[in-house]
Length: 303
Image 1 (cartoon, rainbow, N blue to C red):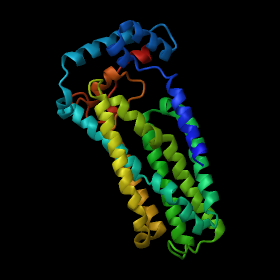
Image 2: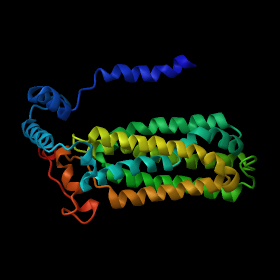
Image 3: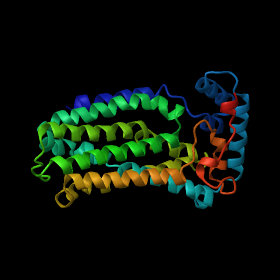
Image 4: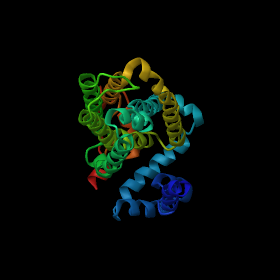
């Protein structure tokens, strides 16, 4: 019902009142002392003097060199815009929304229990986000995206190959044995697990980390727009089922997830434990030959 659907948004809305502003925004709009208070709350320590100084210096530099939207066209910034937008496009390309949007219809024929398979996948998605909250910081953004890409490819391939081997039907009548159908569902659940621990959260975190304060709002907005645009495109996937069959669509998703991993490997440097003020070095071509060779010392790590 509508009342039940409103419960989660209400909880989120109330929670917003307890979330502190970012130290950089606070420094820019409310001054150094208020930023120091926020920083101490976030770091759970009083030893924030050096980080506060770095933030202040960076804010001053950005204000002095502020160029407006033209700054987005600078090579270093434009590269980050492209990476952020592509991450969001690829997040949708993994097939996560079609799995949930049409999963009940797909697995209705495969397992004869579409509603239960949909609940199963939703449960896996929910439970998987719990360890993701820790792993995103302990494992790192880049590594988690790579691990997730491998896992998503594996899940889609398992489902596609199994459908090809044991099902003799099509999208209208899958012709799968019930037990085998549930194994196909398990393959999709493995995909959902790997998405939920990696590409689900990280594709929203990463864009917010890589932009300087002066263009962060615009950069994140563009990446979000890319996500929604690709989401709209993915709604057309249902039209591919009659031509590719269910296993063909799973093979397609596996190929797209493989592209996800390749993109991250070549274009996405690690941002774990690195201050936003040090992100510039990660996207400076003169600093490294490839993303994973860059090492940046951060006050967060040295504190």
